[in-house]
Image (cartoon, rainbow, N blue to C red; front, side, top):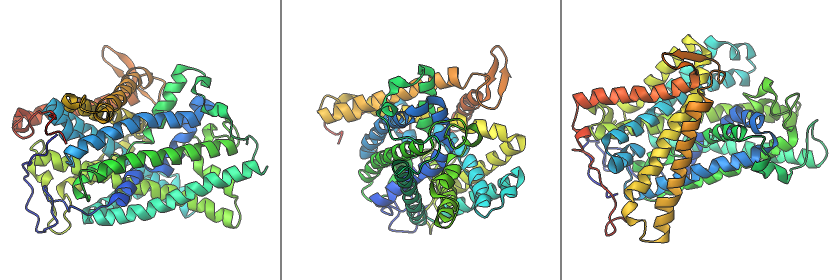
Length: 519
């Protein structure tokens, strides 16, 4: 994918460090990029919210499910690496899908990114507000919808402001928060295993068994698929490392390397914590069991007090664990703003959105309208859904898996199709530009169809259902997931009528890599 000069409506930045769209180029190195990629996934929060659900679905085989869920993520990370190597555009999937398949497919890919980040930001803000109160012992406020909503709104405003001030401040904060998070997760995993193997576990503790890594031991294909769907979500977010490519040193190589490294590190974190937590607490549905429905939405808080104890240094470590989940959700709140602001910046620079979204701050060299717009949209979405029902907010979180599978799958297909003429040039090109991204895309689109029309569509799935004409009762998670993508289709049609330049392929022409110029 040859890099072209993109038309930008942004105001010229008054800095020699400004890149093509006005962003501050060369601000991030490999370590900062990996930190942003990891922080975006919110490892501690993701484990707290998801581990119990995975174990409830697949039982003792949760470690192998965590490992298998990593595979399509790695395959799509290869697609990001290869596409970024030839076109390091901060629009990522939007730009690449536009070049490979045309403007309408590219626009919908960009919309998928926006939808996923806006929805998840609302939930992360809610979690940050709740854990903030729990940290200071204000359990009454933590259980209040009003006060957690107020605190969540404050978090959104604060994280939007930090993103507005500059990418370097964001990256520095991410490295600090991520460092605390990883160290404490490692301490949790190690302490749990030491207690199990020294005979100081709890009822349900057991040594690690090889059967935990046998996917054939899972009760049914349906249980396996539901476990994979839940586990895949916790790997999402590493692509933020690529969305800040225009602000990264060696923009063609560093972001792609950071994406692959992030997925590998996530595998290590999730596999270690899942295995050690299961060895310590077991997969039971009562007491300390990780499948206990009473704490399936947050397994780490209870697990922390069991592993570390409730007195002395143990009390401090347990509180630190709560703080870690808070910082994890807060860090991910911030890094959820970064990719969407840069996606809308790129879309505006390519005339796929109003020109104001391409404006860059003259001093901070960050997107102005795009950053603030992301914060405002997420805040509005959060407040509206909270006022309607916290159950709707909960179901909206389940629905973002569809948006994730949609735009990740498109990235894999765009990689295969764009590089189709050079796949026979070498074994590397065949595997990393063709076969592996293609498999990742097929897996994700397969999961999209299965989840949307079979799992999420079940009226008993989630917290409620919606009655649709000619269809009947459909699970609300499916309606929200598909509906949010269809809203984008309507917005795209309206904007194409008003501003046809991008959709007429005048800005990003459809193209493909050629043998002589692919690298």
